[in-house]
Length: 150
Image (cartoon, rainbow, N blue to C red; front, top):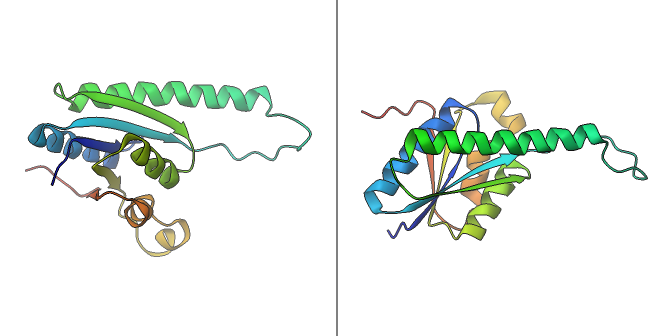
């Protein structure tokens, strides 16, 4: 397997940190570069079609992009150990945004964490990791929340 480019999907969760740690360890092993991606899901808004987004919604997006960049820098400083890293933040649905960014980056592997939810919640909400795995053109490594590095 030729892993020159690894895309790691992150959010502000412990399962995402576990995915980042595993992704960077793979990158170190294979001499890969890493791209961190954080998807900013749009705030649902009922907007009159004749109006543009209210300034308060624009501020929300700006703050989210700013917070996203801070998160990506924190993940890099915590786990990269010198591995070359790029950052991507985009406003999109989580699964679609990750898949789109993987294609644009030409990723050889996507690393993503999962909460491991089951039952009714999983039925109603689905799983971003599962959706990415089904729709991605490249392999996807799903790191469960229970993952512990020994």
